[in-house]
Length: 255
Image 1: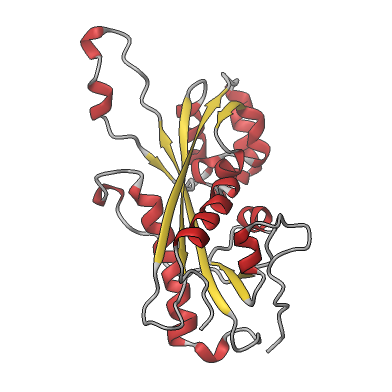
Image 2: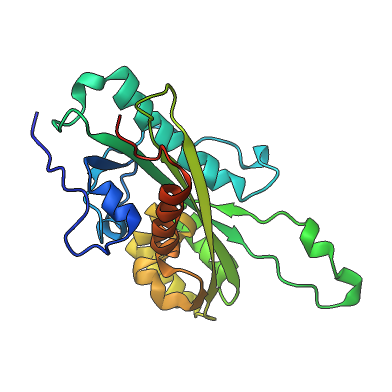
């Protein structure tokens, strides 16, 4: 099996407690095949990419709180890769020093339709009882166009759930730490021909809500982290690592 460099933290990374700890025989496994998440995470970290085989078939209606759905899906992805490598197939771990500690990171991004505020006192408050639609990857170009038409000239909320799974050398099991990040995206009032032209490119078929990338030209502004809209909330995630290092003594601890 090919050897993999153990320098997980790139030389230009900020000298923070989290990056310092990660530089000591740690490996980050990204349980995702998303090229956008890879590009964002590699800003500071060299990581192994082992896509999860978890089938994302959970019903949206199972979750009373729509924000729980992407977090739960991210957790299932990370745990699946952890169990497959560490429990089911430990002989096929990468060729790294014996004391290397792995942490498994996964994410799931969805788009929530935004409920417009009521325009009269009669309807005030009723919008809070309406459940937003959870938009994932379009199933076809027609579905992609439907999503964009619904969001055109309006706003939507992009939510990314992130899960970090890390084994503890001195104890069984694998603690799981969770977070989510939310950004509001405001679409310009685009001509339908623009939406159709973007859909025709086919780019939106592999991303939640059916936009980003070239679709950025359809967006008027974003409240929040643009990286989160793309698929991985870099700023929030690296701050999350700092919190884990400060508050979780056994996070990435070496036996």
